[in-house]
Image 1 (cartoon, rainbow, N blue to C red):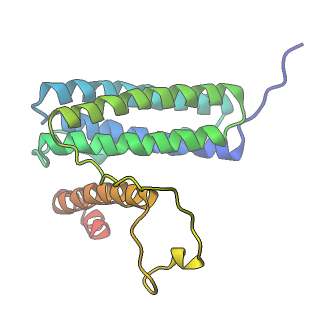
Image 2: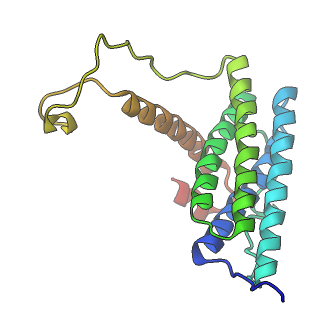
Length: 218
């Protein structure tokens, strides 16, 4: 007797759709970047990133075809002119993909946690593993080239301590206290993402062919 076919759940379909958007966008950006990057080390990592994104996009297509779900349009070659003049320098491209791997690790972990079907769970475990290895390549390259700013270092306490009052959670008012290690980490990494976000907005707002897109970015 043939096993009962298990349909993808709404969260599973949504996760695949989100990944398809992310990967098709990445394909366009990476192809554009490869037209301009000069550093051979960065070129090699970008080529590997392109292979992963194209493979992931194809895998998602196959999942959708198997479910009889229309394949999303995603981003296409019409959305980016890969032969446009250089917009960023090599260090930015390296840093951009470092941030994107952070986003990818978060996304794949969330997708895995909301997936029930065995083949999809296995797929996201593979994606997460590939992205972790890619993360290693980018952060190692940033460190080697002296382009990575490490978060602040804590001075070790002389003894353990405990939160004793609700005032520990005070915001802008009341008694002030030093930031915790978790807060320093959140602020640092969110600040790094925002720096890249601002740089992208400034760049794209100047060169986007569509006036409507430029206005949206601004």
